[in-house]
Amino acid sequence: MSQESSIAKNVIKFVLTAIGLGIAGVIFGIIGAYIGGGVIGDNAATFGALGLAISGLLLGYIIGIVGGIILIKRFLYKSGSLMFGIASGVIGATITILASVPLNPSVLIFSGVFFFIVPAFCLGGLIIKR
Image (cartoon, rainbow, N blue to C red; front, side, top):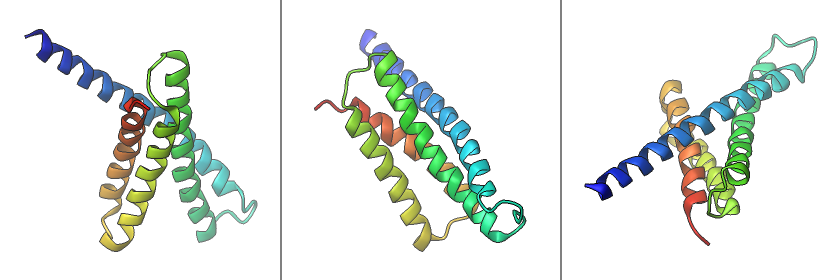
């Protein structure tokens, strides 16, 4: 019985940490979208500004996730490899973006998968021991 509760605790901690990483990523993603959309300047009502805002959102999300992984490693003293966590987050984001081109999913499916896969890959990489 105690082993089942230990597994349940670990799963709950993993899910809650992934949600926290997702929130940090969304905050940085919104900041990246504002920066990306404002790059063009006064003529911000074009499709170029929209493309830069979306690119800023995706890049800011990944930067927020990586920043969250670094904070988890530094302040929660999580054992594991920080480089594996960062690399697996970048790999998860790359796989999701590259798979979205030939599969052509709807925006809701892509954003849901992207915003779930990147934190999960990061945490999975962080948990891996060297």
